[in-house]
Image (tube, rainbow, N blue to C red):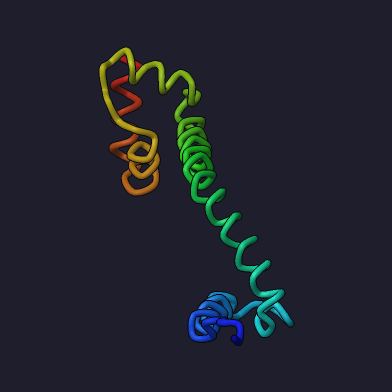
Length: 115
């Protein structure tokens, strides 16, 4: 009796993998053997970096807030501690956007903290 291989499933699996590898350089986009490794590696990095992106954005917000605070005569750490003392619950993303989009409101916030 001949060996059953289920070529339909195999073909569709390979086709799906090559579709995922579209745009990769060289054999990684053309040959299943190399495309499989490239797609798995890309998936691993994508999973890791989805987690990493959150901390990178937080770092960016902190840098922006600090850069906006310094000319107004206050450091980032003093700003954050002042917000906690004044019971102002704004997250770092909102403060960063405020500093970029509406500098007057940001100055008013700092004046409130200094008072």
